[in-house]
Length: 378
Ligand SMILES: Cc1cc2nc3c(=O)[nH]c(=O)nc-3n(C[C@H](O)[C@H](O)[C@H](O)COP(=O)(O)OP(=O)(O)OC[C@H]3O[C@@H](n4cnc5c(N)ncnc54)[C@H](O)[C@@H]3O)c2cc1C
Image (cartoon, rainbow, N blue to C red; front, side, top):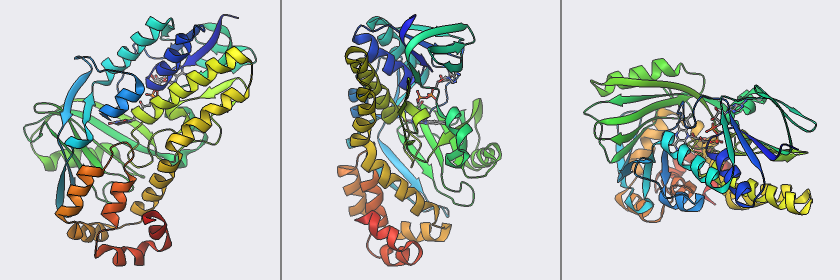
């Protein structure tokens, strides 16, 4: 046997998984098809500091781009509300540096990493890669959304995200723009990274994301675009089986990104950690049931919240622009202050319920959304 474990995919989930396996003295190799860990970066980098604690990472100076103080949400006709995001302690990571920081943690524990090596095929006793065959006991699939979308296109949305310089960017404020015509089922976003710099993106069902983003930027005003990426996001929740035979699936490849925002640094990262611990347990005990425990542990932590997020998604997808505008009319300062005080960035469906449940709006929304709304509001 060449290694106990081969991890395919050297990003947040795969590297955290390898870090945990190496910490228990098992041999683990991470193969990454790109030329460099952390690139090409395709992430907004928005994450809470409590999530970073759970992932066991203290961001280094190079890893931390920015701190967020408020969030502004804008309706299709331009109505808006802003809430204080300071209690939620949200930061913006430089994903290129962040992934390298985890790679370093994994290496310190004893993991090996090889870039420009891609998984071609899973075999009976290991993997076939672009660099030849490697024998191992367990294969971890941490290849992100692509393998998932190859099996099921219905859970994917296309996204575009540009890195932009502009003087209309507020360094401390994230912005979200809702418009079911322009970005059906999703939204446009501005995530500030530094003074006058931001990641500006759009996603939506069946749209030309490049055109939608160019239009959005044109409306915002003068800007310079210094980088463009186009990437799919997964909004359909977790897959049925995280472990099958000698293969364990982690991170976005297992559908572990949030169905509301497609944010996955935290939930996919935790998937990697839980899987790494379960795989170590299996290698030490020989009991296959240890591999199944990873799915249970992840579901115990995120299952209920992801269920609510899927429900929130199906409700919001059915709202038209007028209903969203009406909803904005009913939001009071008290609701905003409650969201700011009690809301959680990682488990945010309680905040969505507060917004959907505001006085005056429920009746109107119930006419459109019916029983599902009642179920969501609990
Ligand atoms: C535009 C955009 C913005 C986002 N913004 C945020 C945000 O602000 N906050 C947040 O929490 N999340 C965000 N996300 C989601 C977040 O990026 C992912 O949830 C997270 O990176 C998932 O990590 P992962 O390790 O599962 O997969 P990925 O990060 O997708 O990594 C998969 C890795 O596998 C490698 N790979 C693929 N195929 C092979 C192969 N055959 N062999 C070897 N290696 C392979 C890839 O090169 C890649 O490095 C965003 C996503 C997008 C697209």
